[in-house]
Amino acid sequence: MRPDADLIIAGAGCAGLSALWFASQRAPSSTEILVIDRRREPSDDRTWGFWGPPDAPFMNLADGTWKSVQVRFPDWQTTQVIGDCGPGVDGRVYARVRQRDFDAAVQAVIADRPNIRFIETEILDVIDEPDGGCVVTSAGEFRSPLVFQSVQLSPQDRSAPVRHPLRQHFGGWEVCTELPIFDPDIATLMDFDTAQNSGDQFDTAFFYVLPESRNRALIEYTVFSLDPQAPEFYDAHLQSRLAALGGGEIRIERREYGVIPMEDRVLHQRSGAHIWNLGTVGGRTKPTTGYTFQRIHTQTQHLVNTWLEHGYPLELPPAPRRYGFADRTLLNILHRHPELGRPIFEKLFRTSSIDTVLTFLEESSSLRRDARLFARLPWWPFLRAAAHEWVAKLATKIQVVRNR
Ligand SMILES: Cc1cc2nc3c(=O)[nH]c(=O)nc-3n(C[C@H](O)[C@H](O)[C@H](O)COP(=O)(O)OP(=O)(O)OC[C@H]3O[C@@H](n4cnc5c(N)ncnc54)[C@H](O)[C@@H]3O)c2cc1C
Image (cartoon, rainbow, N blue to C red; front, side):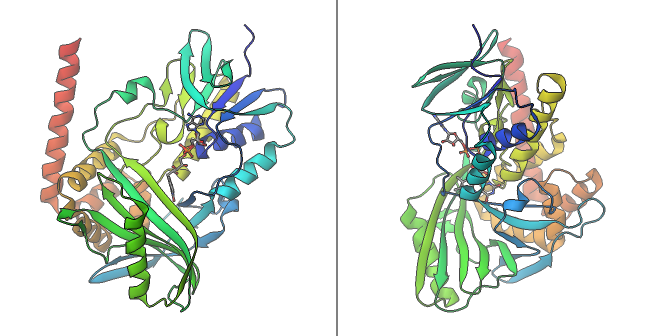
């Protein structure tokens, strides 16, 4: 049977559209691409904060960039200019891209490409078959030798055990205040000057502020815990924070609520021979921070480039294993001892520069620098959590051998 396209992109969110954009830049105009999503209209339900050099993918779409970033704690704070962290990372900025701008920019690029088709329908399943991938939808089945999908966890990942099922959940307002309370030159990545509990339950909680002017900002209240809350929960915290800052009357122009998985489960980049998992379902969310945007483009660019060079995509090489272990260890602490979250973040930023932390989070630091960063943290909780993680990993391996 003739395939419906050379490439099917199932899911046209951040990852699907990123793949489509890179493919539209590099693939010959004869390459047939079919995009499937339940919605085609640009969406405005999220904004993406990320950092990178001025020529990072989609940095041109940023509607705000900041060179100075801040972290705050009840008794201490630091504001630093980022982008001066040694060779190779000069010029880094913190930036924000709105989903509606990203969606519109990609849609505009593909608008006059007859080789790219978009079908608006519900995707029911994505199946690997002997000769290609099949996307089952309410509008029928579509087949292609290659499918990039970002709509569902792969079958093997769905059943994988999750030991730390944390969530980063948040609510944010784009707000105009009567009185000038923001500094438009400084992005606040984490402001921990807030209670670290919901009732008698400890959580790790902070505010995040991206200001546009002295009276206008996106301000979010973020919690790392097991259970997301109703919008009123975040609204109440935002309301009282703006009141405490002395903002006077406020006008809420846009609201944003979200949940991002922070899990120890390792998600696979592919399901079978023909299906590649992109974005969140492809494991591109950094488990301990929720940052995904920039990591998505690294993956999609790599898959598209290798597909066009070799005729099939090559897996994005994994980061050194120490980063996965560090993520699991920190998740263990945040899950089992949430009361230690804020003190650990404070110690981290008191003993390492924000640039050093960002480079570590990019998983591109040297072993020596990483060792120095960890050596300055409180060793007992990390040692205890690392031992738990190591034993859990060993137990899983023994179980796998027994099951064979
Ligand atoms: C509110 C919010 C804010 C975030 N902010 C940041 C940030 O500041 N920085 C950062 O790095 N990360 C952020 N993230 C995390 C991450 O970057 C985003 O979740 C990102 O959109 C993930 O991209 P994706 O393509 O994997 O998933 P999505 O963008 O969610 O795309 C999935 C697509 O699949 C479609 N789809 C799903 N199921 C079906 C179906 N059954 N049938 C048809 N279509 C379907 C959806 O319509 C959607 O278009 C945020 C997440 C949220 C939720």
